[in-house]
Amino acid sequence: MAQYRAERLGQEILRFVSETLQFEMRDPRLHLASITRVEVSKDLRHAKVYVSAVTPEDRDAAAQVLQGARGYLRKGLADRLTIHLTPELHFLADKSVVAGDNVLAMLRQLSPLDEIRDPHDSDFQ
Image (tube, rainbow, N blue to C red; front, side, top):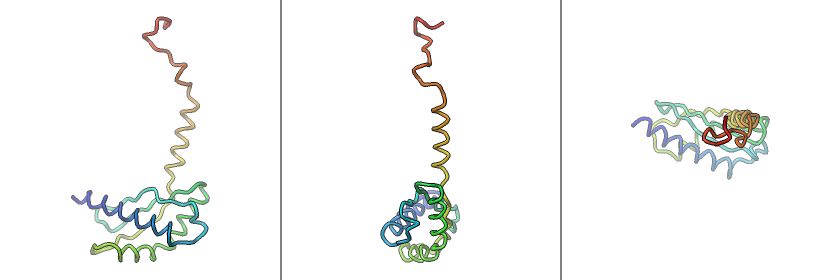
C-alpha cells in the first residue's frame, strides 16, 4: 500500500512541478527544461525530482534554478495536496538521457543486422 501511495504522490508532484515550470516560472534558464520523473521515499518525506534539458549545461542550470526555488514549489504543492506532510523536494539533473545516448552509440558500432547470418540458411557453413 505504501508503494502505491508513493507512486501516486510522485505522479502528482510531477504534474504540479511541470505545470508550474510551464506556466508560472519565467527564468530563461528553464526555457527548454522538463521534468522526467519523480521518486518519492517510502516514508513520503523526500522526493527526488529529475530535470532534463537539451544540453548538459542547460540541464544542470535548470536543476540549480529549481533547487533554488524549491521553497516556492513546496509551498504551492502543500496548498494543492491534502496530506499531513509535504515532501522535501530535491532537484537533480537527469543523466539517463546521456546514458541512453551512450548505449545507442555502442549499438551503432556493432555490425549491422543484415550481416548476421541465419543458421537455417542453405549458404550457412
